[in-house]
Image 1 (tube, one colour):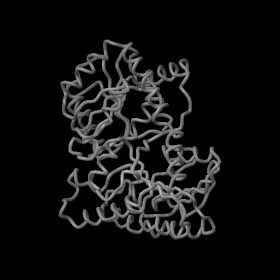
Image 2: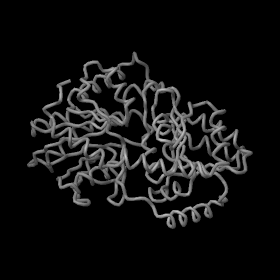
Image 3: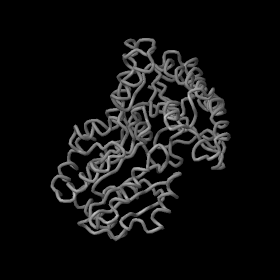
Image 4: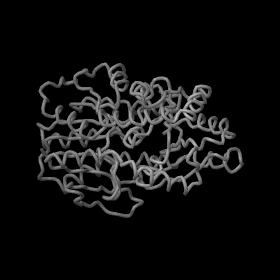
Amino acid sequence: MNIIFVTIAYPRHSSESNLYTDLMDEFTSNGHQVYVACSSEKRYGKETHLTEEKGIQVLRVKTGNITSNPNYFLKGFALLRLQTQYINAINQYFSQISFDLIIYSTPPIQYNRIIKYLKSRSESATTYLLLKDIFPQNALDLGLFSKWNPIYWHFRNQERITYKLSDRIGCMSLANVSYLLKHNSFLSPSKVEVCANSLKDRGNIEKSKRSEIRQKIRKDFSIRENELLLIYGGNLGIAQGLEFLLQILKNQKENENVRFLIVGEGTWYPIIDEFLSEGKSKNVILQKRVSADSFKDMLIASDIGLIFLNPKFTIPNFPSRLTSNLEIGLPVIACTDSVSDIGDVVEKAGCGYKVISGDLNKFNAIIAKLKDETELLKIKSVNARILFEKEYTTLQSYKIILNSSLNKSNITKY
């Protein structure tokens, strides 16, 4: 099959990888011809260009600055222009190609014109939406605008159109599926399914290699072998609800056998940095964003992964960070709102714990238990890797998407 994947979240360099490069590699390794249309933001100074990366034709479309743009007006303007820029580039570079499968991922939600354009060229193609966030409801939950704001209704309309144009919608979890069907009554259950965040299974890390990495990282950061190391990595922003993280750090500051490693960037980075500079906690290491390989080594050196979500969310988010933790067999503590099912998933699989954001007593009880039960951590580590292999590999995602494209006749229109 000829497959096109439309996204803004493809890595800038061919040496980098994420869940999308891994998924496209999976299609390529199974004999399909893959084309990618992704953004190359203006700040990087490159014009629209086509490259071949590991057998995949990657079209990098020059756009405005969409990510990490503090100016919401300019970011909004860049998003408004994005569809026209993508269509023009696809028409220029892929004009002779008929696609069998059109895959696209949110964010952003505005793909309607691109999908319609691609469908007009390949009417028999299956359209598949990888739904990674539910916008604009997530912005509404965080108070970025009100339900009476015309901006909300504009994006809500765009969201509905995108859902209707999609033959299949792959959600991150069962709670996502339930939420989508409940709040979009026009959708048929036959077109909504779980297609989880996934990574390529590169095999389990040898025990000797794992030990070597663990020792090196702990030596670099002066962390004792008997210290319980908890790691959080990713965006440090409003969506994570990091007020609870600060509560935890304050409460655990005297715990000499526990260390926290926080890696990332965002609006909360200076807040955490100021908290640490005031000497309010000495068992915390704060690092800015590092390479994917370096972060993976940090995960290997850690005992527990942390996941945070803002308690204001009414949508069941399912952070992709879980997948990278499970890949290397790292148990997790999911500190989330009450609607996300990520904590339920890890508890059911025996590889982690669910904590409702703000429940400091439960979090502390978990830490106290894990500090003294190293064998329990080993068991949960094994279970984490088992869960990854069973549910979160790109092979699983590939099979789900391929099955949908081959069984299009079973898809109800809405």
